[in-house]
Image (cartoon, rainbow, N blue to C red; front, side):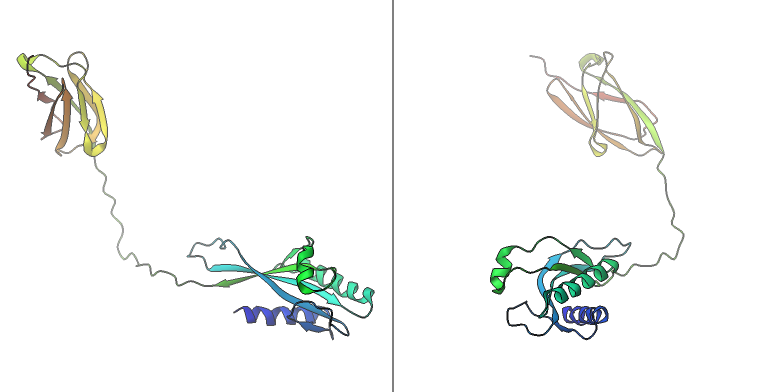
Length: 224
């Protein structure tokens, strides 16, 4: 796939600078005549494009672009034509930051005018198969209702401050001074509701049969 980008980029350069030699090699001191070097210096990561489907994999190919000629002015002219042609091309990203001196040392040549041309490369990913909906979706709503009750201890004495939980709904409340408690919304239509009640170090579990009727919870507390 990268070789296809190489060929496409070479053809683009030849359309900008006709009759000039184009190499896909690192610049060197042994160059003769005049020409343009497109050296693939780095393969960089790019964020995937925004899409409603599974986005393709995407990378960036960073080419170092340099020119050479027997006459410095001619090399500069070629470089200028390429820079502005690349800036006009929406497919390319042009980077004009200076190339580190260490790079030129690795090539064994003196620093020369250049720029970096980044070209995106994508590879499509297999899209997951989505089953067609052949029937009209039916949305069922669950009616809600309040749940009230009272907690009492020995002798039918109301227990204030008792903790009342509905574990399935992650709801918790406490009884008032008359031992009463209230939940504003729990599943209705006679659905049973499991309660957990804690008071005076004791715990009881109760399941209501009908949320429309008050719940009486008795807790036997051992006397000291």
